[in-house]
Length: 371
Image (cartoon, rainbow, N blue to C red; front, side, top):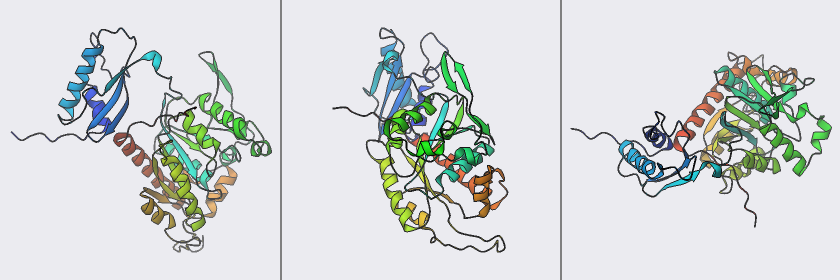
């Protein structure tokens, strides 16, 4: 009898193995009970925490052994799992900030002026058109533009009390739920915010937003690197980051710095890929012509150099600017050239997020060590 092929040692297969382990006296498996957490894989070595309600649970030892047996039976005997399961108790675990949000995606850029917010809005709309549940948070504290891009500058979110907590209902348009600091202050006030004030505003929008169930929460960050970026990764576990750039060298040089921040050991947020905006210009009267006024394939070549995925390119088209000004994002029309481009990038983001989730353990919030 031929030997069955071994399964890859990846988080998904470890989770699938643990689904076969039932809690004694219950029909529910331990994954459904949210007991296995913090799965980590290094080569053949697998570690994770098994979380129990009480420290005197009589099933602790037997369940740990059952987990070891299940993983070896499901994935293969070569898995190094013995003595690598740590036991924790519910009072030791931190309450998740956004438990109903599956993926938190940061949209960032190394510098301003590359169309990051335009990309964030149209990416959100394109994801929603694909059938995903999408939220968008305008964390560009110093220059919030999302209210204008959705055509809702004069509106204000409503409040709601949930479980004795005051929450903020996001506005919703084109299938996207969204919040922005621009709803609560005028642009001039936001521009002079600094340090703790800006950081606290971002935390409030994240933790007090009534987001509900989302497949993706996109967070439009300020350009460059700042306290806002650190506040984000300290407040929520960011699934991955998308970097927006233009083809010219000055923008590409800043991409390296922005990418390095997410990939640094202390932050460790996976970069899902690079989007090249303003890739070429096509005049309306010459729809077949492409003019690479900022240089050709700069983003694609940089992605290859940095070992990043290239998620796609967006042309310079007058309708993109007009859509941003009048509150009708071009991604609404997926049959247009620009709408199709954003639909393609949305598909690439979904695919890369899926691969990230099956190949890597969940991102953890950054904790600052105080000396």
